[in-house]
Amino acid sequence: MKSIFALLLLAASEAHAAPRVFVTNEEGNDVSVIDTEQNKVIATIPVGKRPRGIGVAPDGKEIYVAISGDNAIAVIDPGTLKLVRTFNSGEDPETFAVHPNGNLYISNEENAKASVFNPKTGELVAEIKVGLEPEGVAISPDGSHAIVTSESTNMLHLIAIPAHKTVANILVGARPRAASFSRDGKTAYATSEISGEVKKVDVATGKIIGRVPLADDKAKPKDILPSRDGKRLFVAGGRANRVFVLDEASLAIQHEIPVGNRVWGLALNAAGTRLYTTDGASAQVSVIDTVANKVVATVPVGKMPWGIAIVE
Amino acid sequence: MTPTHFVCRWLKLLVTLATLGTATVQAELLVPIGYAGDPAASGWLGAQQGHREAQIQGDFLGQRYTLTPRLSEVSAIVAAVPPAALQALARAHPGVAVLNITVTDDAIRTACQPNLLHVIPSQKMLADARAQWQKAHPDSPAEAKAWHPAFEKYAASQLNKRYTEATGKPMDDAAWAGWAAVKMVSDLVAREQTADPAALLEALRHKLAFDGQKGSDLSFRDNGQLRQPLLLVDKGKLLGEAPVRGVAAVEDLDSLGLVPCAGQP
Image (tube, rainbow over all chains, first blue to last red; front, side):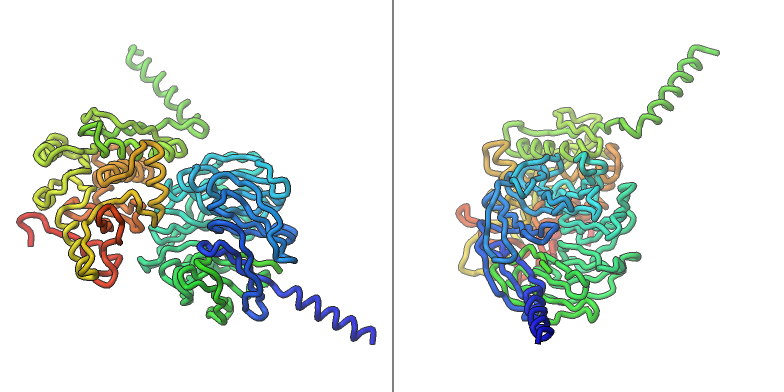
């Protein structure tokens, strides 16, 4: 009897532990919460004007949303699914990355700077001068470096942490949008929207070591993520309405997975088996099986879904 | 040892020391860009905006840009002058890119002067954009423009905001073209690591993939005209973009006013 009770408890806690996907709806001014077992929206949380970037605290206990139109970061409790507070984040926060120490590295699109905030206190920790229209932010897994892309200056700024000094400024194709680090932090990847390409960078030397055009001149790529084993890269193809799967070593395109219109955001589950995409103009999230390289579900969400994050 | 030898040795030593020092202090690349035209006009304000933005990049990459009324010994020339003066200017500075930001005459395009590049769209391009719009929207009159101060897509809103904050004025066609002319030169200076006018002219003609904040990468046609999307406007209100979806492929920038050089088929 006792063991059955324990089993039931376990089942209940597992049900609760089903990963949830949080999606910012840029034009809906809210966040959709998807239960990944049912692939259904279970809650919609109003957050403020023009929510875009989204990220999860290292302990998984808070979710942060950049509300560009309110110059603030909204904080959501992933347990209660309620907005718990907001704090001022400098002008026009577009997106950010969460450092392993919990600080947020935010791109302030209209100010040609990145700012570092402590989300627990709302305190500004540092400001870093970058190029025009900073957008993508990535932090290396060991927390020693950040990359900020500047869209109108066509650069990746490699920033040393905690000195917050720019150690390399790497010229890339027109309108760099997003960047990410490899799991070992030695390599970085970035997309350029207008030149429609992916670049691979050696972090130690700040040199470009690979480049691939996405062949389709409609492709305006945005998010880029390595697979959990590091052997593949997933690229949101924007207007190409596809996710590109690249071989990490050669950057050769292995698969093109059709999804909804204007695919911008990407999030991968911890096991690396499911990739979730925001398909902006289709107001949906596509769920991709990364082994079969195909869409296994689509989930209608709010208006113009942009950013996406998973809490497991 | 002659005095010349002595000086040469010292120079050599200095050069060696300077080279050793490059890891920390890199010599700045000086990039003077000439400007011909009325400094009270919007083209000048646009060129100044481009200069400010070029210098933001130059601060990271080691280039120092100047925008000067001097037209000799410059890396490129931005021109806002009438048609005859424009052609004379290009002839007077062979091997230096002269970037036209105000003259829309078709005849100047078909003349195909090797160093004359047109950032502003031609009359034929504007007419084709209007015709495409009329075909898709027969009841909606419109004129075609290179730019509009209320354009928001493709980060156009950011550029409009930066320009208006700096100048107190809305960004018009000549201002956009002036901004674009300086910024495309700086883009190639950074990529090619040169301020040499002939190298920049070659790169402008054959290597440009410029983000004009209009959603496409922009490059020059063989006749020196910049390929670009155009905007349809009626009574100051922004209606849409050309190439017009449904009439032409949105990526087909050559559906707008492609003309050959005179004497060519």
